[in-house]
Amino acid sequence: MGADHAYAELGLAPGATEAEVKGAWRRLASEWHPDRNASAAAISRMQRINEALAQIRQQGFARDSAHPAANRSDAAPETAGADFDSEGGSSRRCRTISRKLRLTLEEAAAGCVKTLRGKWVDRCPACAGAGYRVLGGACADCQGAGSVRQWAWYGWSGEPVACAACAGDGQARQACQACAGSGKLPASSYRIDVRIPHGVRDADLLHVGQRLQRSGHCAVELTLSVELQPHALFQLAADGTIHCEVPVDGLLWIANRTIDVPTLTGLHKLRLSRDQLSYRLSGQGFPSQRRGPRADHLIQLHPLFAQQLGTDQEILLDQLVATSSGPGCPPPPPRLAAWRQALRAWEKADPQGGR
Image 1 (cartoon, one colour):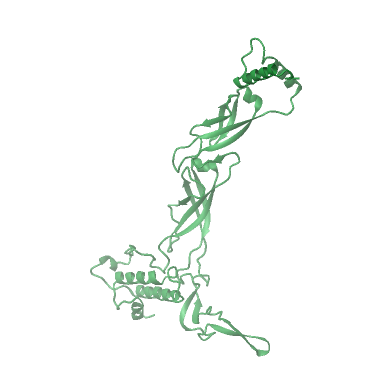
Image 2 (image 1 turned 180 degrees about the vertical axis):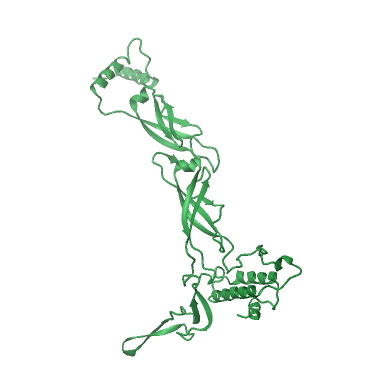
């Protein structure tokens, strides 16, 4: 491509300044880049635009007295309103990689730092990801028809099929040397530490502020979709309340002993009371909102008693029963006292009662 042809490809007169060349390239790239233009001619046109810019750069830009910075080879290119970089058509708007981030309930409640590792692949800027360069003219294999006939046995002509050399578009093409026809650059690995705020919920989206950058190509951003793993002991309510059902030895419950109950921050000492089965631990639950204060942790006790008691336990239980009534014993619970009174009244009213 000659210099005059290069300027004409960008819609400029020969001798246009650097600012004019870059401005024309950005306008055309915004129109013809394959990310925005799905037409069959987009790849070919984008390649010609890139070649034109490269040719003009090679011969040097014309001086622009009104813009001294444009005369310096180290001047930074304009970026305001630019959607594509000036090195081959890659999107300047960051590409986004979405991935899942699995967290335990404890990690999500307290916040944490997670180390993420992975790989990403960039589109080849030389061929705009097509894997080939359009040469111009008709395809030699199909003479521009886009299809060829398959030959059957004994020379019989078969049905036409799409030409493999031009993928059916009839234009001559050549595999891109920069990417060996793959349309992609070699994979790049990344390792990044991400700070997770406390209180994130399942399906929350987190945008990582740090960009992954490979020299000469578009930047990459990470978007994380939070996935809270099911917990073996806790249930999370929408308001941040944590519910936990705790089976407890019935004898410990009767004796008002202290037990360890699990919370998001570890074991917590809980003093039991035989007249209470539900307990609320203030501020021990999950954050009510992201980066907000913690809700409460609710404990629901389920006292359990052994189906069979040992000999010593039976003896002690008989002694305990013996002390539950008689002079000097504490009064029975109101519900039990009311039941005993109703039972005695029923026996007096019904001569057959109790028989």
